[in-house]
Image (spheres, rainbow, N blue to C red):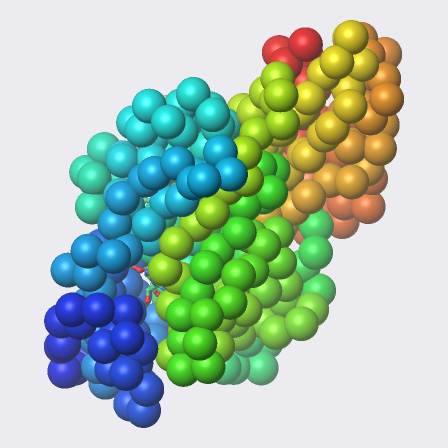
Length: 323
Ligand SMILES: Cc1cc2nc3c(=O)[nH]c(=O)nc-3n(C[C@H](O)[C@H](O)[C@H](O)COP(=O)(O)OP(=O)(O)OC[C@H]3O[C@@H](n4cnc5c(N)ncnc54)[C@H](O)[C@@H]3O)c2cc1C
Ligand code: SF4
């Protein structure tokens, strides 16, 4: 049984932020993640603030500078199927298409996808682990086959979103609104590394919400893509994945952003791979060197060492395919 809570339906962003103050309040967008967490007592809530009727949070449109604005309430399906996004940022459309199942994509929103809670089975189960306010990580020395190989520090989750890595690769930002007004945060720094705070998933402050996602205009000829490997062909979270945003001019890579999914607690930008490919042709030698660089600094746990060859292979294949 979920806990008892008050439920309010906000009609504007201002009203939502007002409702979020005070009691232990939670935002309800599509509810696909929130309701499961409440049902399983991952966390409690005294008040649920639904934002689903706030029309200002909807819509996907081109901005004056040639980029795109996506309202936080846009469903994952809307992102996946938007002709504008498919044309300008195919990597993001591919990321959205990789999220969960069609039903969940129809109900889940982009804002919720970026703010969802991690899937560590200890966290989602009865264990009062570090992320839930306890004093230890049960994945260390436990069943850690789906945990991270980079950036673990104190908590070894993998970041669950398939839309965040392409958004980081594309240089996107989130716009937020909270008790202290609005701010714009690059998606690259939006998620909280465990080394800074193992109990928070994002840098959002209490009462602050995501209102829109802004993507800059793509560089001329920019190619973007997202590739995800999962254990089953049905819906599942990434074991490893890579989002690319690459500009090639005269056969040479002039711009590169490479971001991993499924291997770190936040979308993991691989500057190591970027350094190897920048200024080079994506020939076989460069691609193999980049695949080696992809796992530099990886620190696997007892049961997830398979992610090392998996990540290398995904990076190699995806870079070779982007030639
Ligand atoms: C079975 C299953 C499989 C899944 N598989 C995948 C997958 O493969 N890949 C993937 O990426 N995702 C996956 N998901 C996650 C799914 O994509 C998310 O549940 C969904 O996108 C969240 O959107 P929502 O609108 O339903 O969020 P909600 O459930 O309403 O909210 C999720 C969280 O974000 C907060 N929140 C929501 N909107 C905002 C906002 N605007 N500002 C600040 N905080 C906000 C809520 O308070 C809550 O904590 C899966 C989920 C399930 C249940
Ligand atoms: S990995 Fe993080 S969420 Fe999972 S048990 Fe350890 S502290 Fe908890």
